[in-house]
Image (cartoon, rainbow, N blue to C red; front, side, top):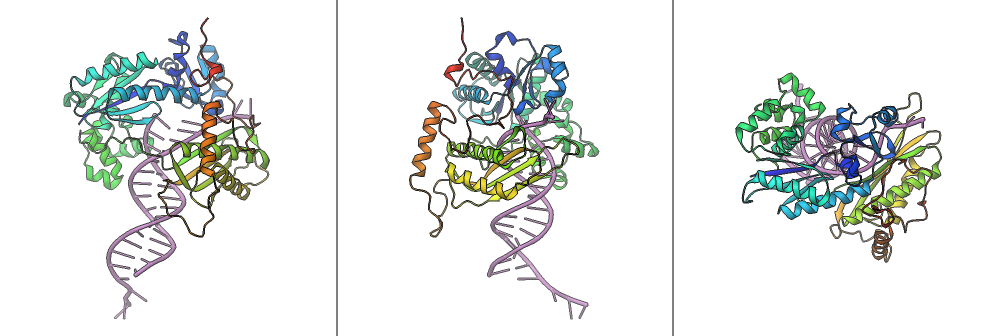
Length: 418
DNA sequence: TCTGGGGTCCTAGGACCC
DNA sequence: TCTGGGGTCCTAGGACCC
């Protein structure tokens, strides 16, 4: 058994660099939606001491002084670049698990030849075909491949590929890696492990598994076993999502019901599109609205409401209708709302449920209508056809003042060379 | 003025069943 | 004095991931 974890370095920042080669050695950061905080940093930006999650409004001055290139997040670009990376990897490895927008596991079992060299080949090919730098970690379990990848990123002299199949090499790394670097061990667990004397990955690997299960959970027990080279996690090839969530901060605080209605209709439409893209129906829907969390003295409120659906559906009209009904029930005047959320639950494949003889019937032609709308929007651009409740240029739209062009998905925004 | 947006899995506890 | 035993399902909350 061997796995590789392939991970793009500072993915969002690297995507921006692909189309601006002069930023090669310049520190780059990418901001969250609404230009809220820093969510991606290049090595140079990290060296300047810019932390993950740094609020932009507090750091703006310094970033400018230091000559940091700052971008709003451009998910159309990142999504497309991610698809290119994954397609490249799928051409190299027979079994690939896309783990996140910038990471994938590959099953190396049975692949001929030198695996480390194969890792190098993957790096080179992704670099040549997409312009994105990646690191490769190799190990007998997924958890060790993850840790190997961390090592490849941390020590540049490894050449971007670290192979942990050799037990001696493994021991050396496990002893110097803090337990918090291990996949599945976050801040809280690290703090609870410390009193037991578990500080390094090595400590965790050699702690009694039964005790770990009793005091923590079966998940941590598996992690410890995986660190010892005993596989407990398999490669999971694409499975449909079990929940779909669309939630956004508004570009500014909203007080009245009307604009919040527009926003929720828009979020529910987006969620419905994601739902149809994976070919599922939603059995349940939930909406939530909340005030800001950070302003001291400002009254806080958070309303959450499950909204019944007449039948499992992917019809935008039905989902928007249910969401707006839920909104009426939780909206309270007098608050400064900052965020709304639509959550689709109880997802299932078409035909995977038993209809109710007496329940309302889906509207005739709904499937064809939705399919047609999706097709037109795919050709003409998102939102070309939408419900009348969803404005083209809403007043509550998020702030994205530093957004780059959609180089790969929009004819009007292609890179021009003169 | 200004602090993200997605997901997953596990566990405990309560309701309910026979 | 004394009041069963075993199971399922659902939900909320907590941890983690990127």
